[in-house]
Amino acid sequence: MNYWTLLSEKNQKTAEAVVDEIQQWIVDYEEANPGRPSLNADGWVEDPETWVEDVKEENQLEKPILERLKKCKSAIIFESPGCPKENPPLLLVLNRYLTATGQGVMSWGTDEYGWPQVQLSEEAQNMLEKFMGFPEDDDEEEPQEDPDEVVREAKESEASYEQIITLLESASKSRAKSMEVRIFLTKCAPQDQKFLQELVQFGYADEETMAERQGCTKEELRVRAATLADKIFALLND
Image (tube, rainbow, N blue to C red; front, side, top):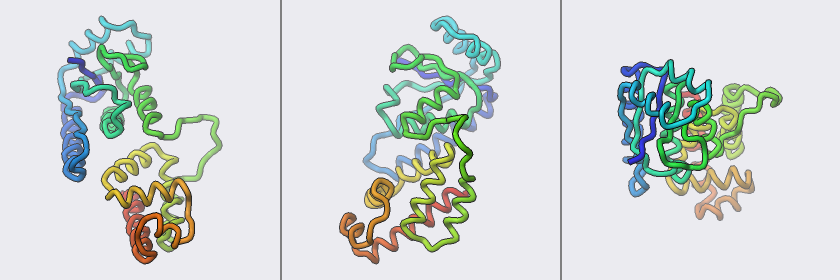
């Protein structure tokens, strides 16, 4: 059995609270998505000492990782269900763990997936977010508009197709908001997922064309757009 180990700067009590919170999220997700594959990402907390020594013994580590290991106070362990790149919902779970546990070290155990088997937690998170399609960091990128300000301005206008696009574009500029939107999409009904995907991919067309694509009336489409706009706005301002 291969084990993944997230060695964290958080103490064990805090790590256990993180595990409990994310396990509850997994339960809620699976109940809301019957018939979909299980996320299969049960984690548990242990004292980090043994796991740190195992990581040191089994790998040639660079100095930044060795320095980070000195600060680790907890270990969250997972039984590997296979390559995470091939399981998009699992990427969401791992990303939540990496976000919640702060600076640490991620060990992928003995299985090889095509990337370093031991990484700084932020490097692991950047990699997972790349697999998920999140925007990459660019320190030289021109300053962007404040996503929260864009969201507030969008809410002031009438609920519409353009509003949804504006909300999603604003969320794409923030990693945290991008992640929340992706989680939201997994919980949407299939027809809503299709609507949002086509809206993002093709942009706004005339209502008659969009309604025909969706197999509904223009009135039904207006209600769907307004409802989703309100839900996405509430999500981004929670």
